[in-house]
View 1 (cartoon, rainbow, N blue to C red):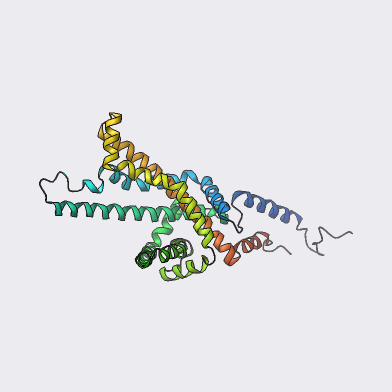
View 2 (view 1 turned 135 degrees about the vertical axis):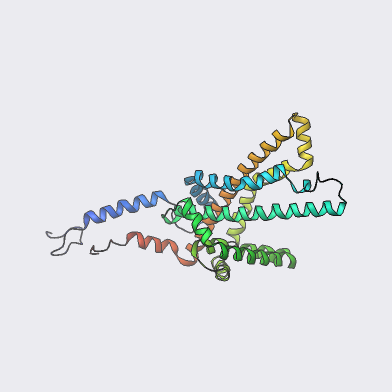
Length: 306
């Protein structure tokens, strides 16, 4: 059978076997450098998210550590219950106002850092699913360029969740589920606040059991990390630790500051990576994203006859 080469050679054309071989090798390298897109169950979503985080752990955990330094410092050295102390004689009403202000400042700062860190990690680890890695600087610039839509998206999601909580427990969890992907959609796909919420509702349709399982396991795995800092910062635990350890107060506060920063950073990075894996699972099931990505991989290079 002269004049044929792998069944694709045509008269007057060079053999495309070398290009196809290079394409296969490139595809194999791509497959081994990222998580395969495919429908996943709860365990597989968790594994895919943690594997993606492990591939970029230093960058993701490092930037989350830096972001949490400020809120953790307030938790260790200026907890809300201490606001207003040392200002002389104040009545109980003024003391309560100071403590409420401290609680609001802590909550607002924690929320901002949590959202920013989650979106930053989600954009970084998405390359482990799509094969298009971006740097921390590129992810940060993208988030900052989308600050206003993300801020508005966060307000809308919070208002919806609060409305669900006021209505009843079941609507609250329903809205948490259906709105869970709205911030990530807004940051990664460039949709506006309302469109991001609508798309989150569409993507999460039919995924309640997977969302509930992923959320429950994530809480069991990551909950102790976030609850440790709050417990260690409480006055009762702090006083008991200082008495039993014979440790100076500033030393205890410094250890609490650094350890809380580390635990919050790991919990934020892991939670963001798992959410990203759930996001791509929803896109695979709703949009056949895995098939579209595979078609792009096997598409012959331009100028090469198929």
